[in-house]
Each structure stands twice: as C-alpha cells, then as structure tokens.
Image 1 (cartoon, rainbow, N blue to C red):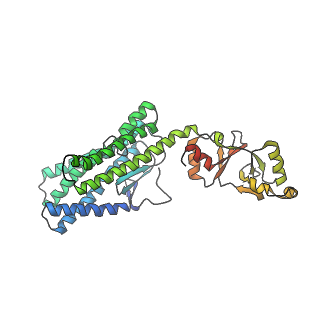
Image 2: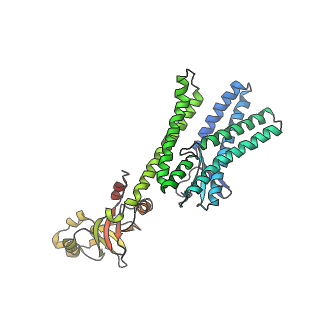
Image 3: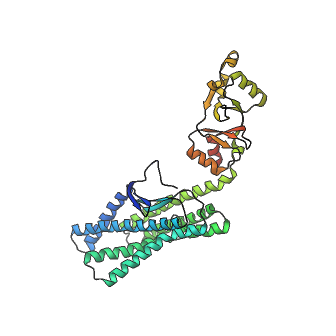
Length: 373
C-alpha cells in the first residue's frame, strides 16, 4: 500500500533515505510502560538511584525504537532494490511496520525483503558486542550496550520464527507460494503457523510455569499474553484477507449484474415503459456521448400516472450514478474490489466489450458474492 494521503498514520518524523517515517501515538504509551518496568527492575536489582534507573529505562525504550527503525529501514532498502513502490515506516505500539504500494511480488523477493529486518538486528547486536569487548564502558554505557545486544538478538530471533506476521513467516509463505503458485495459499499456511506460535507463547509464559510449580513472572506474563493476542488478531486478519483474494478470480461482473439496457437521458417515462414492456430488465440513462448518468427507479416510475408519462422526463424518476460508476462486463473480483474502494456509489452501470449497456451491478451484490457481509 502506498503512503497514506487520507489520514496520517501518526506523527511524521521526516524522511530517512527517502522513506517517510511516522511515529504512531500508541508508541508513547509503550515507551512509558517500558520505562517504568525497566526502571523498577533496575532500581531493585542494580541498587541504583531511582532517577538513574528510570533514565536508563527511558534510554532502553529509545534503543528499542531505534532497533525497530533500523529493522524497518532494512526492509524498505531491500524492497527499493527490487523496485517495489514507495513505502513508509510506522513505529507503533507493537514495534513497527513498513507499507508498500501495489505491486507484483515474487516469492524470492518477498523472502529477501522480509529477512533483511532480522539480519539488521543481528548486525547491530554484533556491533554492540564488539564495542563492549574492545572498550571499557562505564556502568551506564555498559548497561545500555548490553541492552542493545540482547534486545537486538531477541528481536532478530523472534522475528525469524516461521509464522506470520513475523518476518520468518515469509519463508513458509514463499515456500508454499513457490510450490502452489498462490501467494494467498502461502499466506494462509504461514498465518496458521503464526497462530501456533501465539499459542506457544501463552504456553511458555503462563501454562508451563504453573505445571512446573514455578511462580508466574507478572511482567513477562503480561507482555507474552499481549504479544500472543496481537499475533492472533494479525493472523486472523491475514487469513480472512487471503481467503477473500482466493475468491476474487471466480467473481465476475457479468455473472452478478441485473440485466439492463441504455436509453438517452432525453427520453420520457412513456418511452421507458415501452422499452420495459419490450425487453424487461432495468433502464440506464446515458448522455449524448453515451456515458451512463442515471438508473431509472422502478418505484418512482410506477408512481407516475399513465397520462403524465409522455410529459415526464425519465431523469425525474431516476437515481444519479456516481462519477466513474461504469464497469466492464468481464471485470473480475480484483477490479470489483478496486471499484468498491475508489468509486463512491452504491451501483454501477455494466457495459459490454462493444460499449453497450448490458446491466446494473449493485454494491450489495459484490459484497454478497465475496462473502464479506
């Protein structure tokens, strides 16, 4: 998806290497949480003043944001190499994500773009380890370096787990995609693996400690359950979207439409009634250039007395079509979804390959066929 124009995804920080970067407002919440949790733990375990402990906690939260930013920039840079459309990065409550414009990906490119993020975290961890080994840092610097090392290792390892929405899920998705020729089937399989990982997280942090007779660690339990819930919600959305896309090729405008024929907008109600008596269906009014502009409303038409038909213009008993509400008879589900997203109208005039009006398609018919309602 391309950079959003309608609604900003958050506070815009600027551009890095040409990529717009946004800070979601939820990030401030998680920053406060991390600062408080780390500050309390450092004060309790490192025996340092509260001010120093919470300052370190805040710095650690910034280091997480920086690690996530570099992770997402790695995605964006590799995507640029493969000429994927413009992207933007959003740092969020759950880390971050990189969004791209519409494009045709390949399994290999998708995998490399995904793995670039975790690789960048392993590189940062390596640099931190070298710095901590070569130099003799102070307590504060040493604590920050250690956090950078372990946080990036954890971020990298967690993200290469083979389930969506994690980066490693692209490995499963790409393998199934390559084998079946369907990215959507790959997405469904990888998302189910992601669900299994979410269940595993809950088992690890909540169930296994109880079975082993150990006390539950409140902080890690809450974080683990929240991450698992986020993953479950994300995989549910991915599965639903992939299943929808699998249905798209079988949905055709010509199969969904109600039959209709076109008449010039200058005709009157009597003319419309004669056409309906001869052909049936619905009537679409067109302008002198043949562009559909309205659909005759059957209820309004029947309300016109017989004697008033010749003097009542057909436009007086018609519903105006939205701008661009014209769709080809052979259009499939992808095109129909595009129309739903871009043309603000509840119905469309359907035209044949020869340019004749052949039907009327209602938004409700499309939604019903796609089973989204």
